[in-house]
Length: 297
Image (cartoon, rainbow, N blue to C red):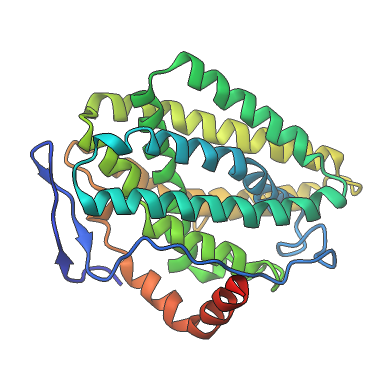
């Protein structure tokens, strides 16, 4: 699954940016068959796991706007044409992620979840960071959070069983999002290095980003569970904890990739999992083409 030919290089801060052959950050305008028939517990009939993914979706719109803003702030300082092109496509991809997750968020709002309240909470939190932290710190935060989302995306592509319990109408949304998070996983990192971002800052900020991510996601998840019309079941909580932190759990599998961030010579494409992107594109070629054509019509 790993390996592959590497092409191209950009000299930045004395290191090479490694881009796997065939990887292109590219906007895909998708259509998904999401509707109100989606059950409230749409992942393996689990309240805990469904609300975990609901919480992720609730934070995406404001989070991705923050990512776009922090990367594009430095666009004028980037002299390399290829990286500037990646910045523009990164922004377009993240913008389309926001659009699709807002559609999903409308569905779970109609199911009784106050998504607008969660979005306001995330917006105020990020606005505070914008006011208190430098633009380079914000870019480092983006690079760190992009690493976390890329690790999650890579996992669901390499281990499709993690998505098997999802409602069939929603599984394509999360697989597509995983592909594009994997595809553009180095953009914020490369911009950070190009503008002189230090190892010390990115290591320090990752500690803050990790605490921020888990605290916000689980705070929203727990509030969603509290508001659920069904009572919380201990068995379901144990099932959910195993899904996230068990021996083959979602987050437990992320640990080795997470720790690699703290290696001074780290680059996101040291883990060349571009083959999972190609596999998804082959498996979904007709769907991608028809969805893109429909969206353009």
